Image (cartoon, rainbow, N blue to C red; front, top):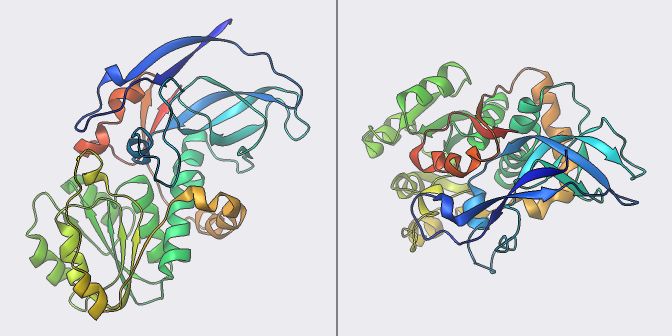
Length: 332
């Protein structure tokens, strides 16, 4: 093989659904692997809501935007096919930020070897960004205590589903907010959430009053939307809000107004946004925290797998429609 396929970002999205014209599918020559480098064949590539922020021109954010003309940013799982690096050998499985491309040349920085005897789908669903994000947000930001009530928005997604299971395993009462009856059934009957709210059908205020009669202690926020204010209105004193994502606002030029600061003041609520690039140095300790839950069978997952690199373009819109079921990824 003399070339491989990559996808570059060439325009900024203007709000609304992602269109194919903001990307360019190209063929690149197979690289020469220099001393200190390794070549990875990417097998599975992650699609994440954070990508909508990475495509924007905003330079006042937690991570620089993807430059126009560059390969679109993403994480993935792959196999080392050639190595001139002392820490990696051909055949090693690795995960890291590889981008929308079939092959990836690296100097090793940011790549982690995969030792767990699990399929690539499971690695990308649990031990890669979703599991790390869930573990950091719940334990290090939320600081949960047994007996507390937590509500998770985007609860059937890759991060939210793990947050809920970790919380349940540690003795919390767990409520999930989802966008379909099928997802509600899955998180309750398969994942063990105590209850679920389908925000597209329910009387949100009445459901929250019924399912959290003693109030809410922790709020793991993935989506924004009308339920956000209703949740904060029902939070207990010294509650904690972990702001992980705001998918409902990513396609808007002007985000929706947030909750009243009066409630935050009166109830002494802590609101903290967090993003994983701040915590990549903590990956070993996060994996150490997460792994026992997985090995004890307390964490289930499901993968929504698209086929072929170019499926990633339309695949991003599944986040807006709610059509993804589980961890969204692309099989290359």
